[in-house]
Length: 199
Image 1 (cartoon, helix red, strand yellow):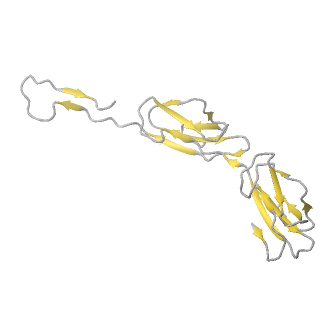
Image 2 (image 1 turned 45 degrees about the horizontal axis):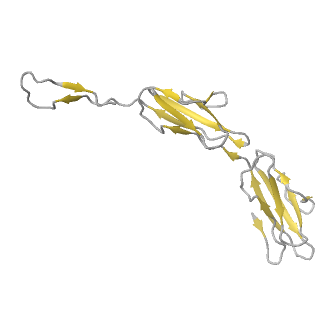
Image 3 (image 1 turned 60 degrees about the horizontal axis):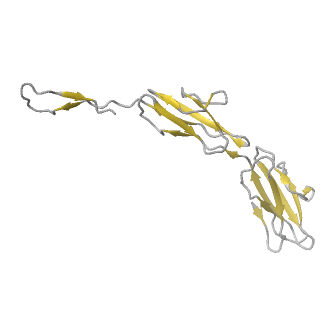
């Protein structure tokens, strides 16, 4: 957010901009387009003023956040001052994705869980309970049969944990048997075959 009145010093500018997801050790710079401007800042939630710390070097982000940086710019020969603020935090891990994405399924269906966040670890449960890092770690595809509810979430260094996602699979319904020949009068000795429509 930025506040500036006509004729005043230019507002502080943050790089990266507010609401950017950061990792530990990321640098936050504050600049100002007005020559000779002095930038004051706070990072503890306190209002910024001319008694606050003077910005002299990039700030080092230490997560997880959120971290709100408030800045004030003032310059000799300019009336008033300008204010700006920016907020930063860790990114959130992407939610796990299931394949197949829904049921019904047949027995011995191979089941996959993936996460697009690099380096993420996925934990899952098979009884519908909410998973934690004490749950089973997903290491390889699962082979499942019958009705089951799978819940999973993902974690990664310097990220907020993902949301928990769940999917319930039911057994595939058996198709009706196929009679050959079909309905109709038959002659004596005609052979009738019964086959399954399930593959």
